[in-house]
Length: 71
Image 1 (cartoon, rainbow, N blue to C red):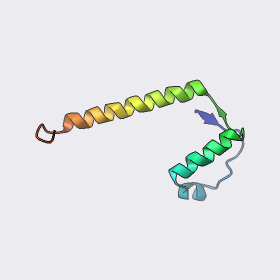
Image 2: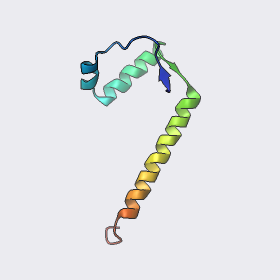
Image 3: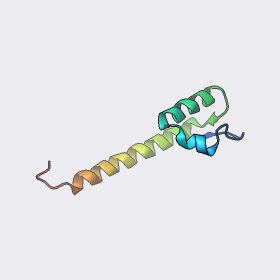
């Protein structure tokens, strides 16, 4: 995992499900800044590169499935 927290989560499961993705990102940023999480910069960089490569591959696959008349 990129960010780890040894303490229990502050939010209940039901509340966590209702929070939007951007809200969760903002909350995580605050928690990291407060020192609640330890962030591994090398793992974070690795995950970002993997994610970018995955999205690049998905885009290439979708473009290859299009018919020539759509392009």
